[in-house]
Image (spheres, rainbow, N blue to C red):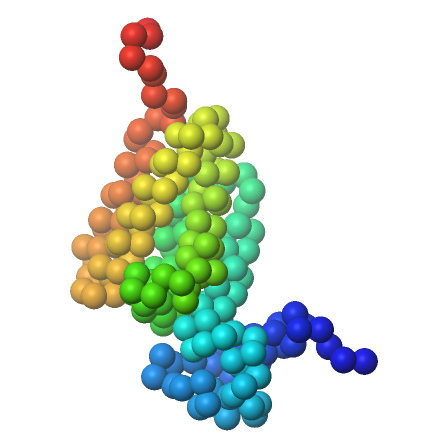
Length: 196
């Protein structure tokens, strides 16, 4: 019995993880070199992933999906600040530094070749959704929870990029200060003008 296209892609993704780890193949490797390392014909990779950017995008999207499951498993009862701290702690861990580098590499490519990375870009809101759910559990309305979550994730990504470019204790201290600022700000809906 022949495997479905989806099963074949899943098996290839697992082979990529087994061979290259969660950061995927180096951006310097061609599709042919990647295929050679996996022991498959390069047309199989092209069939399932389309292009080298598509392959890198699929590997990193799967790694991020797995990461988000680990972060989400820290507890459905975490509040906004604790969830944000868990996200920062996970990605600021030196164990995940190469994956963070790969993430920013693909982000840079996606800025110039958006169409080649549509799937990758579509998944960028996963962490925002985790934070929004935490804010809603604390009683914040949906619109305000979404806005705070977007701001928080954008700032965390900026701090992670800063940490890669010039690692220092100051970046970690700034991250903690930023995260702590949400603990000081009450989670409440903004009032409309003219109401008391």
